[in-house]
Image 1: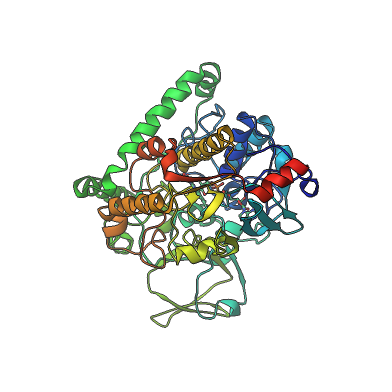
Image 2: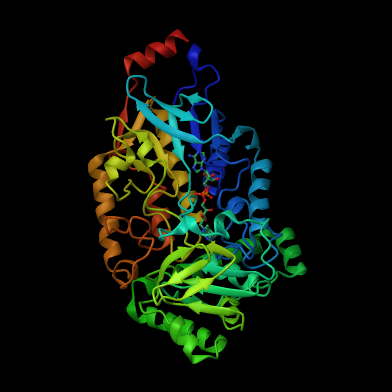
Length: 504
Ligand SMILES: Cc1cc2nc3c(=O)[nH]c(=O)nc-3n(C[C@H](O)[C@H](O)[C@H](O)COP(=O)(O)OP(=O)(O)OC[C@H]3O[C@@H](n4cnc5c(N)ncnc54)[C@H](O)[C@@H]3O)c2cc1C
């Protein structure tokens, strides 16, 4: 990376980060720590925060302990609960941005629409809502769960009442005394159902597949403990390390049938203890191996379902009509409000068709329905382009912030290598990328995600699991933090680009 500017690029940042959630903020902080100041973070919304800005539904909280679901370099002694609520996590992120002095790098309300590599100039051409950019490096930090998905149900637009997705919660819609339908029983729904149940007149929860649910054991963090963490930070670090190791062990059930049966037994006992009605229990019992779909954690979802104003509907939804939801058995469930809790589109990033590499092909075209990347982070044919939370970097058992931080280190390693050798552009070797993807695929074969007998959002349109990392976090961190120069193509500066720099 050079530091010179051409005239027409005056004040153009060298690096564009797309997205200001945990990934974009973590990357920006690390660049500053490295002494790199020449970057901008383009964020489509009006503030940073990503997931934790958008998901403001009642009960929204992390499901990995906050002590681990925070940046390793920015411990927070003030978490109020084991699993902190959304508002606190969002505030933490904004505080990090201010404390690490990266706010001034943010441009809000700027949606990146397209990016194309100009091989002659060895630059990216990035188009966002109001302007264009010419950075040398593009880092995509748009998140796996940032684009909400509405289900494809016949008649959806004909509904006469109010309908919204849980990631775009309508706080202006009064639910008190209303008849409400919830479509979906995933990680978000099981958090907001217990919160809205006492408020609403009737609640119909439409379940396609029963989730496995483990006890959450969320509790407030005592004031004395916060004081201890504030004054003896090493104790909070020790707690974080212990939580990390414990969660690494939770990876075992995904590849070991005996361990999975133990976890299934704990989940079954949890249900037995919380649901007295055997007919309801029968509806709630999952018909697939635990872990195949995301394992959920909750202490209050089952008790909420057992309340007299709640019906768990397991008949398939046939259509949506003006008055409510029609199920396959012919029944009409008349409601005033429909809340959609059907998640996101992690295997089909919205920007992928609009990012074009060295050969003019888009990311989506090279993926052909199945996202692939070298170490989840860099992409053969796409020089100086990195993705955070890219293909096969999500987790079923621990904090993805650990993965994001490892990816950030990888990007920094590549940038350092480029600077030290005056390299203009770098991309992973196609053979190295194929080998990486093949080894991830092979290790995924034996896991419950691939062989657990269910369909899940981990699996893409081609039937491949392009979402999850197959092993413990430790293995990813060890492998990805290290740069093997032989696995990258390092490109010297083209003459045209060198001329620009001399002219400047
Ligand atoms: C309700 C919920 C709870 C979760 N709980 C946990 C948990 O407990 N533990 C865990 O490990 N993970 C959890 N996750 C996953 C969570 O998404 C990640 O942990 C993390 O927040 C991802 O951060 P990110 O920055 O990569 O993506 P995001 O937080 O999604 O941020 C992406 C940002 O990019 C912006 N953006 C997108 N497209 C564009 C564009 N074209 N131009 C400009 N900006 C753009 C978005 O507006 C957004 O601000 C949860 C997810 C959800 C939805």
